[in-house]
Image (cartoon, rainbow, N blue to C red; front, side, top):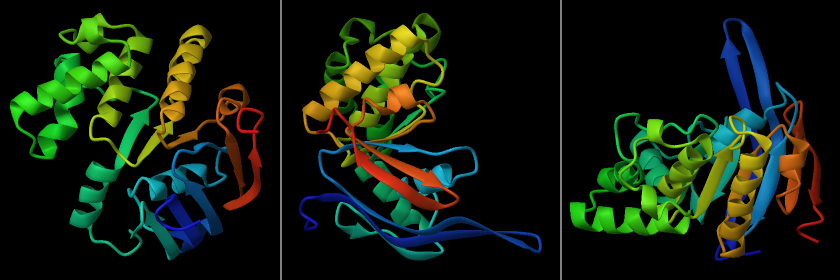
Length: 234
């Protein structure tokens, strides 16, 4: 696989935290690649290292050793400002708690990354409207989060994650606050986005949700213990 086709390339990554006199090895030599257009679930019990791995992939934390290339760029050694730019341009984040601005319309919530990227008002609104239409909320652009259901709020969050056309979508327990029916709707949307070519990496503790992905990477004690294609990906 060359870098023209690789979204994520992690090589022998370790992460060690120092807590007083103690050293905690959160990641211990993790290596994997994710191709563009893949849909991957990362699973593991509490304390397995999956959250540290997600933070590393999201450029929120740096490896202690090893290398991490995101869409062809080695981000392992970048400074804070460069990492912030990479996060803005290359990554879309979807969280369990939606993380929407409470007093702000769906349109303005979705347009926020474009504001930080310096895009003009008219273009921001145009792109945000198109993205809300894509997730089925074109008729809710003026609604605030309190006027939307949990599933609709997560769709707004997904639209916000997509609006910068990122190389990779990172979803952290995206159905954790949703009932089973709404979770299925959000997973159906993820499937459509992936079928349209989006690269999706999802952290979840829910086996049923994980089977929506086409590949499951399992982490335990800071190491990858299993990496399998699912029935969806077969």
